[in-house]
Image (tube, rainbow, N blue to C red; front, side):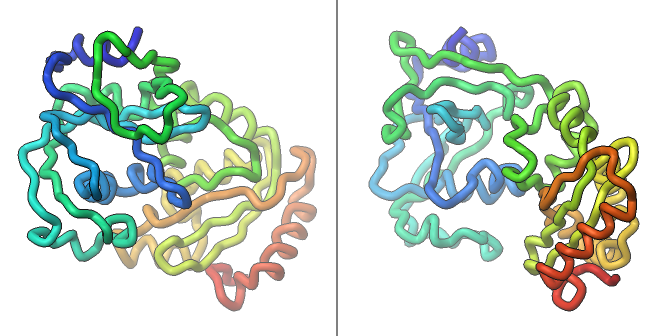
Length: 283
């Protein structure tokens, strides 16, 4: 099946003037921006430079590796006006991405596609630089994957990811869709890092026991703070938490490692990163 056929089954008139957009910016994780705050992504999408969205609808994707693109919604264009007449939201954190924009497009997200968002992945083809293309029945883009509901992303390796809090909760709550994450994180003990993206402060912790890193992170998914003193204070202090927390692995240890061995590695990384004096560790 291709994306044109799929959208047609959902009632989209594929013969209308529709463009497909594959968003990707060097140095920025647009998918993370989108998952953290869809409104921020939509502000970015609504601002364009010399590109003219001379269409009635856009089918929006975010670039993925290997020339793929992840579906994030269908939007109707209600109108356009010069950026000089628009004031971007004050809390928009990526002003550098829109500072050269010339036109603001008033877009409204269309209903009826919610269960496809984050799940449908297409092959964009070899022309990745051509990030806006017409939706054409005679040049369809094939669907290469339909991810299960609750899927976060493919596991890239223990030291090669940072997981935001929303994705951590989704991963923990959907073990079947994220089977790879559950198996691998449960297979090791180790030392992990929690980054407060609002302040830049860090917390170092360790995981050991029967469920390894997965078991420790499950407590964060359930409570937001995992029982840690300074993290509890943050969660209780502002609606920004625990949403501002990012989780990553610093070092893996064999599942058979003792508590003392894990704590020794934890102490080493606390000293390296200075998280007692300048971070979120209290001991």
